[in-house]
Image (cartoon, rainbow, N blue to C red):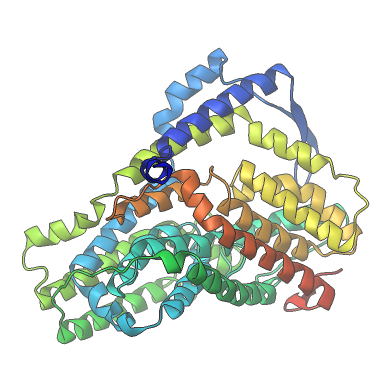
Length: 500
């Protein structure tokens, strides 16, 4: 009888959990504000300090904020926009039969190989930032379905790969540029001049990508993979001629996009920010048209290629079917948008109250004058970064808080600023994967709901519990990579080291 009761016991839904967390944050803001909790914020570069206090959300100003900014916070939530746009592309690619044709070769591939490919691509896709989640969640779900595997396993794999591997990768994006600028600025307190380049941490990033992909594959296959169900894909028409024509169209579009990001050629470079100093900044900078329009380019290419293949395969025969193909993937995605709405309210309250900032600064400032060195200092920065990220999973904000204190500490201990940034990247990646405040956790749960055909009890903490053992071992892997790199004295990049 007890087993029967436990089987039918339902856990608390993700939205209910977010509401409870929101009220907890509100109550905590009242208590901490009443206690006068505050901390000193050190500004990177100037090293001037500012007093930051916890604000009471139950004040007149706080209540006004909740009601006046709730809709605006939801509107400005970037994942909302990129998920909508990405679903349009994924829907067309799937309903046209193009993905079915392209992915059909994976039907006879071993599950572990598919897992490795998925997690490796997930890690290296971080070069396009958070767009990687929006693009890979729907595409990988289709891949797993066509390969007769559980789409939910693919969704878990993508989330683990991108999140835990965010500090690795083989490319250099806008976030890396800003992090490097903060690192350089914080290093100026110890040295008169310090310069980080695109290749400063390239070697350790590539090594971490390979190691995390292998370890992640083993862990996922031994845990989540054993419980995954088989999926029977929907049969769609295929066309060899259509695939060849679509391939040609894709190449033409690819060459056109490539020409648009090449500097110095006639009529080229119109997707670059010509005012930026370096090519990486021109491509991925804050004002770069390519960075802002990448997801739009993805949709346009997907719509054109999907329409071409759909016509040849006869999966799309009319304008009516074309319109249906654009919107088909939105079925079952209601939770994503509802979840993001309540998440935007919770994150808005957290930001307005300054709770995460004050608590993080108090933790960081505890170690301002620490005498730790070597492995102990490396581990300390790693752990502090994880805790700070759990409180507020915003990478750039957290490094702005941490770098003015820890970069000088590391340099005094003969540890290079580049290595300090590597440690932060690793801790930030782990912290995002274990916090209920990470917006893409809700997006992942939304896709789990979409591909759930057996009425599973999907909850926020239940989902986190499933991936926690994998994340724990990958956390240890990250720490081994960092500590081992330092002890063995390997180069971080070309001409850079973990020590000064």
